[in-house]
Length: 315
Length: 219
View 1 (tube, helix red, strand yellow):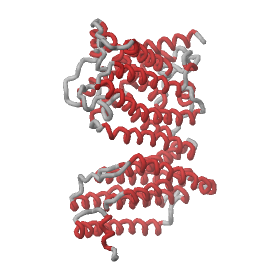
View 2 (tube, chains in turn cyan, blue):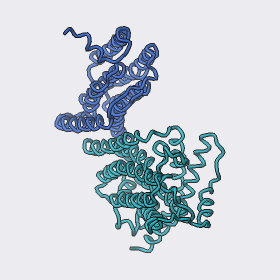
View 3 (cartoon, each protein chain N blue to C red):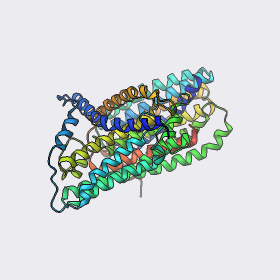
View 4 (cartoon, each protein chain N blue to C red):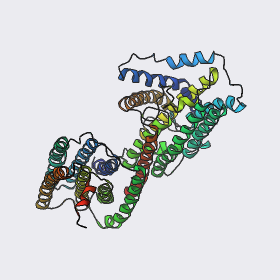
């Protein structure tokens, strides 16, 4: 483990923790603009977090310790995911700890705990949200794995850092399989991050909410952690997507100075990605819940096509 | 530059395949026509690139022919037909799209395996895409089988012709000009006749559901 690697690792996690709410604010701002509304300030998520951290946390009478622990576990999982994803540099001491498959497992762990916590209180909304979350999760995970596998097939490695290093530092080539996998990844991330065609992050409408139903019982610092973790999840997914499909500008091992250029590159890529996300959310209508399996089946199918095309064309 | 271009043939081939899948899953007739138009455009682009890379200039002509026919003329005809039939906003009730798509995946694997030895024999620049072209043909077949309404079936038929055309371009660098012209003319006449058929079916049964045609059988 080199000093530069350690520094890059710490910087990546710190940057993720600091920038994740900003990304959420940026997406919300663009969403409001595109929909012809007045946008909340870019720093609104920070204000919300600040407010929530200063508020008293109210916990239901019958809550078990699981309910209190779940936000911390979720936050920890997402922070670790941000550390594993090669956002700035591929020289990450944490990267050997978990490859792409373990990363999917990490997201699953967070999902299981937040669903258990939602059912813990015993309200009908929590249970409903947990069931819906699990429905989406079990369909989205195989699709996500298939997307990561098609990238792994090209680079012959399941470690995200190795994948990005191989993709970023070879001569530019068009990979039809990666193009299809990119579409599949976008669909999966929309579902996983509770964005519009699947879930609306801005609604508390009983019939449609998924993510909000899960965290309905949380308040104060617990809610702040859950919200922050949700931002981190969006950040992690964006970074994984950018690393896989637009890998240029990520610093490689042994070039500490490249990180200086990697940061503005990352900010620009995230800003463009955020605008695209807001655009997708604006031009699509929310689906009925029973359409979601179809949506995710399509994502899975595209990912499988990507694998097959790679086998056929070798590219 | 040339490697990038030959890679973009593969890209367009994959676009054709994905569009074939999208057609299977699409319920709205209007979107179906848009998808078909896109498929035609991808096909024309792929033909153009194959023509440029192999130096076979008659492929330019067939790319232009594809563009005029499949991106402009046939979509216009289809739009007119669905407007006249008043099925522009029709949404077909399809049963179980995920199952159909899984069958589609099986077809794709079958086509890829089938094409692998043939592609090994060919020396054409886009031989790897033969499997994709075959998969497109089979998927359009599947679409014609699972659809009950007349207009989507016609679109399935046209999309199958796209797949065949792409197979010809990929495996043999295009057919002789006279054959290509003949096929283009056939497709045009075919769509006109099918258009008339659709009006006749509607006249007879007040519906475009082709299951009604079974009543014509004498018991």
